[in-house]
Image (cartoon, rainbow over the protein chains, first blue to last red):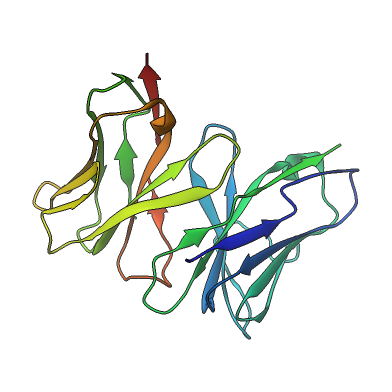
Length: 114
Length: 112
């Protein structure tokens, strides 16, 4: 149980394009989803907390207009990196939480901006 | 703010026990977790412990918590090559829908 699916797993695109990453809880309803960013050989950095039906809460230093988060249903949250540039290249990981459950993570999305 | 520290590297011979250590600073930490990350993948929850517990065992995994010293450890018995990964400890004040503070991660290497 507690499977979280993240899509796509790897994306390469040109500078200036927008990229959408999906995070789905497959076998439970996720009241909260989290979006993390991980640089090579580093720990996870929380970007934002997303609750279904409400605006995401962004961590200090994370540009909300740059990283758009939508949590339209209890099983889906999306992160859109708008007008992506090479410095946005990173490994993005989502996690989802059900009632009385710990966080379960997706497999991550490797984003490469050329 | 909260701070979680781990050693960066650990090498262990196959078949031996691995002990990965973690220290944290937030005295309000109530839940402590161990996650495993294999190359290019997300994080897999291994186990978690509530702060009123001293120990939790699950098959080859044993978690020890010293709340007084704010020290957490993960022992992996009979370490196998498939245990090679980065291990993150994390803490939170509440269970579930609260952000986790992660340690720096410990890269476990298995020596044949």
